[in-house]
Length: 169
Length: 179
Image (tube, rainbow over all chains, first blue to last red; front, side, top):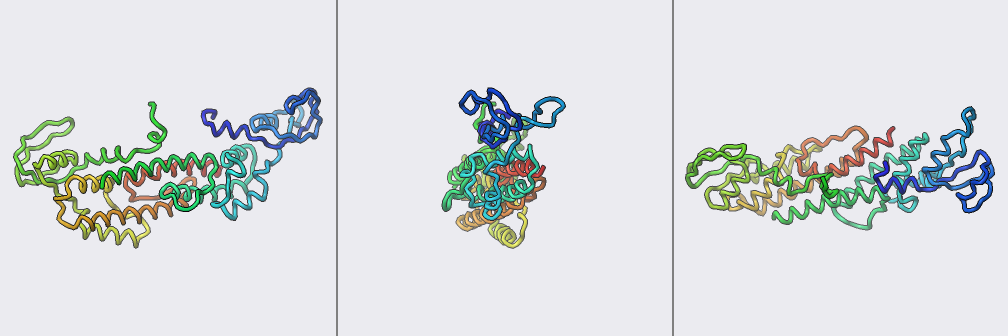
């Protein structure tokens, strides 16, 4: 879906990749004109990395151009933090499009731990979004971009309700 | 249609009030009014002191012109409302208030408060209590929602409308994570 600015932003996130083959004259993607040696580790945007990691070098070879590494935002540290403090963790500090990036990543790879931890976190954080939209008490919870959009939507509905109630009484 | 984003995801409170105005309510006319064919509905002849059911919008209009008094619905009695609040506090589910309880009570209290026989402050307080207790239950329910199931029967249209955008988007994300 390219109609959502969030998705464009997500596909532009850089993820670490390792080159499986030596590619001559591809240096321009890192700012020079030289050959990229096999084994080079580069951070590529997700849209490019995703393609290169699924396309085979030639028809009968198993090798793909690059292999994807796990991005730092899904490191065990972050997952443990999300598991132990699903509500207070600042997702935007990890990545402004954390949830979306995770959804993209899970489409490409099996990563049950991330899926399970994020599942619980989404449940609890959506209650938090509701609370903050009903009454802005305390510090604003740390939302990532998709959560912020959802918050704005819910807050708009609540504000409309409050205005209507005030008018009716 | 070019609508602002918020209008695509949920109704506004005003739209729901508008729908609620089609609910029937009992009035006691004070003057003779001949029967009238209105669009989609026929107003029967109104005779003084004879109770008749008319849509809320018409009741409020006639009330404004001092041609009728409005009989408040049974569930808005102070004693009945107290029962509702009590039940709402004790039972885990939502009590079965009418589908339009918020807009209906708001419109009646705004337009016909002098026809109410009980204490207005008390009933306003009870309605507010109901709203707050139910909102707290909705909040609890959100954490229990999973990718394929949510159950909140007994919620009225206006309350559903408040949680609909949050619920639908959260469940969509959970569904993607579940696969």
